[in-house]
Structures are given as structure tokens and as C-alpha cells.
Image (tube, rainbow, N blue to C red; front, side, top):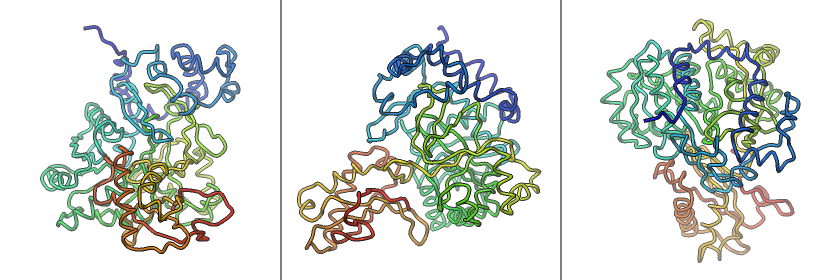
Length: 500
């Protein structure tokens, strides 16, 4: 049978190249030139992008340098992904040249499909290799990887599984097991399989991983016995939260025992936490004035490092724009995450000016994980979604639950959706609802609204239904009188989400 996919070269390069060789390419090859070359490749081979340029009056031949590249129109889900058929967005208009398809929700909750092939996964596998080699020393320690992301068409579980298997093929002593978000199966795997390995890695959404740990403690699991490491994705969390989770698994070294991935279904994994980025983030957590000076906000973003030859970042009005090759190639793709980028030397100099020396924390580990890569930081979605157990939850989903018979007689239709932390730092989906004038809150109302919202979230939002454990699917409802000054002030435009 004729081989459909010319991925052998990419596979051989991944298997034979050292991590250091891969992560220093950007010092010899210009990321700007690589992005420009990708543009010309995509403009030639992708029918949808050719038409997109024509619609915007752009001649491919006129884009001959980085200045012209920076003037290319931004690609968005609305003006491109939802406008052109999926095959037209693939190279040569052939969807069949990609081997897998993942599903995510678009900005309005409309499911979108994201094809990819092995060579795209191999590129992303390097992000996993960074974490497993630099942070977890998995090149020399037998490692059991327990994939706790939801399995199925959603990107996290399958992507993690495949990338970890590529690391095994490269020679890492890694074994993968895939219980998904089945807590009882995860606990059984820990007690029966983990004793046979030097260390165990739990990979999943932060609140779910914490739930696995906490419920395991209640069942008598001795987490420190298994030398547990943690890989997260999909949520921004505090350093206090990281400290708490590390304490419960017996970790005294969060910089080398945890790592968060910055990934999306559309663009793959764009960057990852490193021992250096975690040390920096912990410094900014303890010195909020330095964090405000650098990030421009009083909240702490996720801070990752990235390979600019794999994912080329730009900033547009305080949000991230990315260029990278995928099953659907992305050229100046506006991913709507609020954040920014900072160079390696710029970041270290800034920390030093504020009295920080993150490299000193890594010195006892021979500076393992301190690679000269640029930094990206993000605060989460800049639109009106909230992320809960890795699922994007949209105000439109909540609205349906409030529009049901009887409930409409109690509420104005205005609400605020937010993800809170309770006293034990577990995530709670909170919905604060405005009552009609002269309607007094009752327990029966709260129960009815909570049941209705949960019912319609499960019906409308497949990510919520599959990512969120059943015991965390019932929202916490707060009923407030009309015009409450904190949540429903009069005379201003109402915002349906609030970032906690």
C-alpha cells in the first residue's frame, strides 16, 4: 500500500535528535523567517487561506519580510474556521491526509473539528519531553503515566497518550495507562501498578487531579510512597493551590514535581511550565508588586516557556496571536487568550531588578530545566467563557437553564457565572442569579435553578458532560435581589462572567 503521509523524516528527526538540539534550533534559525516560510507554504497549498488572502486584498508575492508578515490579517474562528469547509482548511484541500480529528467547542459553543497527523503530534511531543526529562528525570527513572484527562474525541486525553508513547519509542522508560476521568479506576491503578515503578505521573485538569488525590487520601492511599509527579492543563491556578496539592502527595519540590501545559485543541500544546518558569511564578506570587509591574494586572497568570520555531507568538491588543503548523495550519491565529510574551534575558533581568534569583533555586539541580527559551503568559480566555475542569462553559448554556417554565417567573435573566474555590481549595461552579423585584429567595428556588442549569449544561455542552465529574456538575446557586450593587449594578453594561 502506498504510504499516504510523508512523516518518516519527522519521526526519524524526533527519535534521533536530543532535546537540547531541538530546543536550541531557534538560536541558529530565525523564528521570523520560519513563520514567513510557513506563510508561503500555506498560501500555496491551502485553498481556504488562498481565498482568505484574496478576500482581504493580499497578494502572496507582496509578503517578503517580517514587516509584511505582521500586517497580514488575523485569522479567527469567526472569519475563517466557521467560514470555510474543513477540507478547504487543510493542505491541498484533503482532509484524508490527516490521521486523527479532535473536537472542541467554538466561541459560541459550536463544536469544531481539528485534524492532525503524526508529524504535528511529534512536534507537540517535544513539549512533553521537556517536562518528563527536565522536570521529572524520566530519562533515568521508570515512570508510570496515568492519563486522567477525559478520553474520546476531546483533545487532552488522546494527545497526552500518544505523545507519551512517542517518548517511550524514543527510549524513555515510560509506561502509559489510560483510565480517563474514572476515579475508582485511577485509584486501583495507583495501588496495583505504581509500586512497580520509580515514579507515577498523574496527568489531568487541576481540579480533577486534586479531587483524585483528596479522595485517594480518604481511601487510605499513601501518595508519598509512589513518588507522584503532576501534569496539568486547562486551568489557571494559584501557587497556594500548587503548595496544597504538593503537600498532599508528599512533594517538597514543586518546581520539579509539577508542570502545567498551555494547550488548545486548535493549536496543540503551545508552551509548558518549566522548573525555571515555576520558580519565577512563585517569586511573583510572593512579590505581587513585581508581578503587577511585569504582567500589568494584580492577578497571577500562567507562565510558560515556548519554542518559537514550533509556535510563533505575537501580541494583538493584549491578547495572544499564534502561528504554527497543524492539520489546519494557523497563520496569525487570534486565540483570544489575554496575555503577553517576554524574552528569556528580559525576564531574568526583570526578576533580578526586583531582588529575585530563580536560577539559584535550580542550582542544586545543576540548572536542569533552565533553558534559554522565551516566555509566554496568559490570564485565560479574553471572551465570556469560564473554564471548569477543563470544559469551556458559555453564558448561553446557563441562559437556557433559566428560561424554563416556572423559573422565568422568579428571575430577571441576568446572572454571573464564575469558578470559585471553597475553603479546601476545591473548584466550585457558581452562578449568582438576579431575582425579579418583590421575589424572595427560597431553598426550593435554589434547588430548582441548580437542577435546571445542570440538566441543560449536560444537554448542551459535551465538554462539561465528559470532563466534569458527576459529583461536581451541580452548580452552587446564589440568589440576590434585583439591582444588587455588587453583582447587578444599575446603569452599567452587565457582564455575565466573573474571573475569580
